[in-house]
Length: 316
Image (cartoon, rainbow, N blue to C red; front, side, top):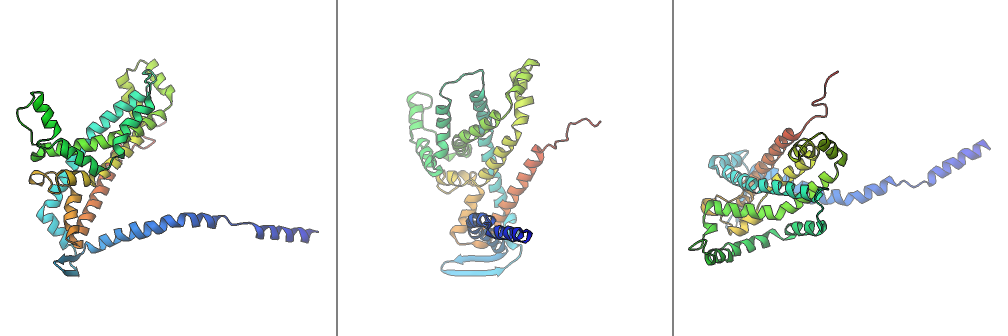
């Protein structure tokens, strides 16, 4: 009887289905696609950055190993640092009003005192610019702020100016328009994220702060901001990475020239010039530099925002 029971148990175990292999089957497509279209190109970019490899007319030069020469030449010219500075500056100009306005709207929409009707409608409206293609958005602004565009015509008609302003012919005019477009396209998305973070905070904390006599400003700085700091960190890092990869907006708005004295040319616009000429060596070096700079800035941001859980505790 005992032997029969043991044999039956072995049969039942043998009939069991091993579901773990199906899990690997379902996640396999992601890793295959990632390996082919992301990991291999990334490794090839690092590889070709150490080679002289470009096209001269119909002739392909290289690949010839040159070590760090591509990096040395790029830093000697100073252009990559100049365009990196342009990119960072334009992103900062657009991000500061973006985070301020998004925080203000998020606080208004999540406030229990201000009973705003139609919140879902307003959230949909402010998010809509994020759904428009950046190239289409840039063409719209190019036409609106042209020398004879509607903006100038309205200002002249109202007597504010005597003649049209050449927005795209000035350094700060071009930079401001790029920053404005980035602000309009992304402040809705940032508002939704901040609203989600604020709604996740226990309302009793706000009530306790108000009972203790804290005003709205103190509640924001002492309660709201510290508790939603992970969301703020996520918004900051993703916005910074997106800003450093800025391409389509300034490319369309300045027609690929980078504006006056190339003061609005971004790193990716500079990279695109090498890719058009099939210069894989210098293009790979620029990509690696951008990758390293992005990683370093992200680490700095994480270091600034990171606060250990034991910080501020009193040792007993």
